[in-house]
Amino acid sequence: MVTAPTPSAFWPPFWRGFRALTPLWLGLIPFAVAYAVTARAAGLSVLDTQLMSLTVFAGAAQFAAAGLFAGGASALGIVATTFLLNARHVLYGLSLARQLPLTGGQRLVAAQFLTDEAYGVAVVHGPREPGGLSFAFLLGAELSLYLVWNLATLAGALAGEVLPNPQALGVGVIFPLAFLGLLVPLLGDRKAVLVALASGVGAWGLSRGLPGGVVVLVAGVGGALLGAWLVTRNRGESKTNPNEVSSDKDRDSGAGRTSSAVPEVREADESRSTRRGTA
Image (cartoon, rainbow, N blue to C red):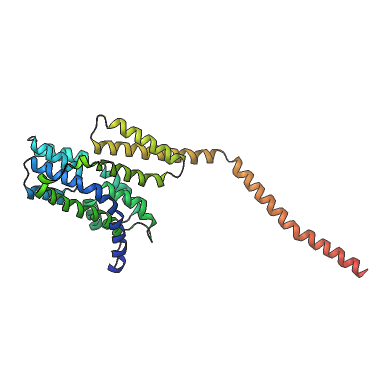
């Protein structure tokens, strides 16, 4: 049974999660402003632009929805497109469910505010927390970006015409570098490196013809299957080659017999010495 933490236990990990995402604010703010400018240009009001950030909270999906709205797409088409773009969150949810037991209400809250960046920080830095990854740490990471994204959206919607083009600032490299920094500590052995390379190459190839969310979903599932196969194969090889294990056991048992014989030899020597002294 999952129990809610007390307030004194909730806030410290919450603020640690919140602060863990602050380095990404610099890259997030220009994109939120760019979304707001795009949405306003597509004909959305300031209120509609802000409501989308408050309720959807998914940058790529919001950009796509604004563009589709400007092109006169149907509501069903907009929903289907945003669903495909966010399909990768299925993998995020499955991964977090294995690492972090949550109540039903906590699952709903975590799912609503989950982003790529919050997930990445949670799975990398969360296990290093006292007691492991917690709902408080995850929520802090999520709300850190949620707050900044919505404030920047409001600024862009109100003053977008006087702000510089975010793309011209060269901030596009911040998020790829951030995810690369999260990935490197996880590459602990050759299997992890192989899975990362295969997933990256596969994602690059799939991106030529599929939406970004589907690419992440397919590449993520493929990478997980490859990693599971490599681990299973190694375990199978160790089971089918018992010679090394048996030889190790023989050496251990031999060492045990030798060590147990030492006291007997010493006792025999002492006995002979005693008999000589008596004689």
